[in-house]
Image (cartoon, rainbow, N blue to C red; front, side):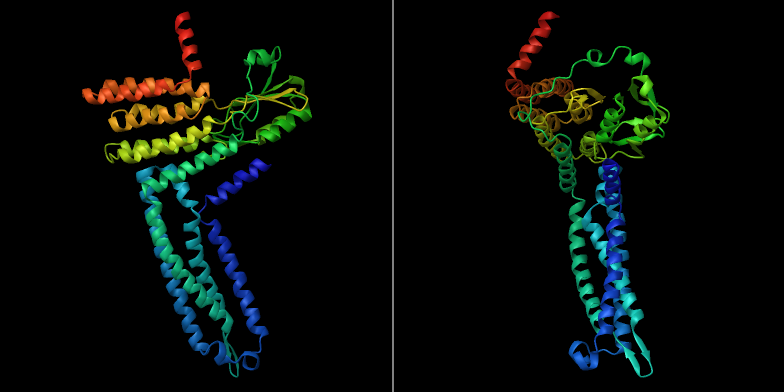
Length: 454
């Protein structure tokens, strides 16, 4: 349930209407409150009309109507500028980054401020009364409306600066990088050394006899991207029903309706109620989210880099910025312990088998396409090798060293094939040699032993 609520919360945050709706409701409450305060004050005797405000009913109406009309006009301009910014972001950085712009709190607050001010002025305008000798002018409410107008002007100046900075390539890349590092801290909180490394045995050694033949499969109810799995809920179900559950997919993968997404053992315990609860634990949507999918943020950085390297844009500097951010995030990831695929309960009974991420899979997602499309540019290829060197210098993780050595070799070979200049080839060899000098001796020894056995 907590996972599903968090997923709904992320969807709300990604919508352009969430904060403006809250601010609009707040404006309604503020208008009602100030009008009640104005009605409760005996203005002529307790305050004096000239002391707070000198406008009569017609002047107050004109002022509020002018403010409301001006504010809603500016709100239309702000909305138009926002749409233009979204269009530019989609064409230059990719459509998957639109969600980052839509959930930008600055843009939502700006839109909400103008709409809230407009609605507030309309409500106060409707409260003005002039019936013969009975005249009611909500002076405090009008004054608050003027203050909201001044706030709207300040917000508009902020918006012009904010929207111009938000479509800057370095700002976009830095924002995606922050989300990637936040996902790493959330999904992999344990650092190397904080807990003993978990050894994952082969599945054949941990699965009960006859599991593959007799286990009961359960299928997906719908098609789409797996956005999240309620892992605590699955573990609780496994312990409650005394079963072993194998999950065949991880967040970020596409699932077809009716496809097997997991298995239950023993078969006698696989009730319809249990299968239904397990199906509910899989959150499937039309697009990927970063809640449990670390590769999603990685793919966003890679997409920005690949678009920058396209012939239509030809911006290797943005691609190099993306590579730098990937190196920063993967250096952080190299210090973390990736969870085992085998999940045990408090009595050390195997309850859930997941399909987890691996170091090789993460590094493939980060660097495969960059190598395939980016090594035509010497500057990009050299920067890849430099980032590899930085990563291996900052971690003793043997799996990371193996992955870096593999990718560095592929980058070097690709660049040699695409580079005809002798000086550039020497630069490539030097950067590649620097990576190899920092590779873990254990990793080199293991590779050497493998070659000798071959």
